[in-house]
Length: 96
Image (cartoon, rainbow, N blue to C red; front, side):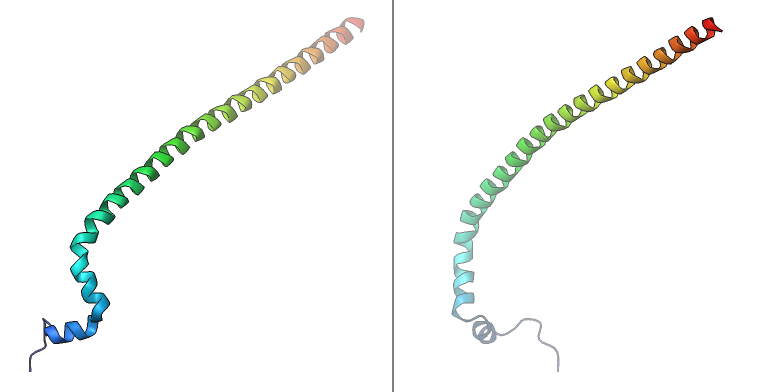
């Protein structure tokens, strides 16, 4: 007794039923229609991703600029503080 590799047509028809057979018959008609919709959906998704990426780049650039401004302000305040300390040290050194 050898195992069946290809099922009998009667078994396939009974197993699939009417919806399965209808799907097999309509598949060549539906695939191109769904394919066109799938392509449009994929293209729209890619466009949305590109727009989101571009907006994200702008936001990151703005945040980077603001961060650089804050760092520059902090450095300026540190330099000013050091200059005041040097001036006070020089004045105190002169009075001794």
